[in-house]
Length: 122
Image (cartoon, rainbow, N blue to C red):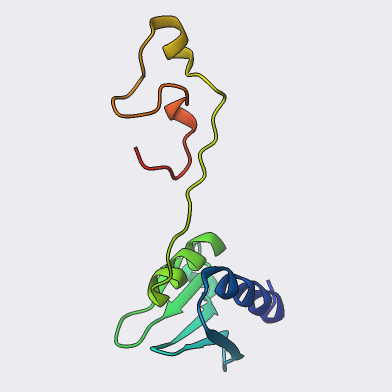
């Protein structure tokens, strides 16, 4: 991913999260400047693989991220942005529910197979 592509992605995410910030080029990577903090994102050195990204925060060690998704989550948390809605993907009814008339796990919606819940809270 080029710096230009990463910058465009970060600007889109900041707008989506409702965070007023700007993204500038740094010596290595990009600098995110918000009202309360300045963060820096840079690609991890090749010898740190599988780590792909480093998120530098003030007065803290760099946060390592193995993927762009992990980087965006760490960035959103560092900026104090809300996480938004979680996605739940289901086939309708759990196979176990239809055979036995009960849910597979207590507290889960009996109409959704718990094995394919993504990011939803029980």
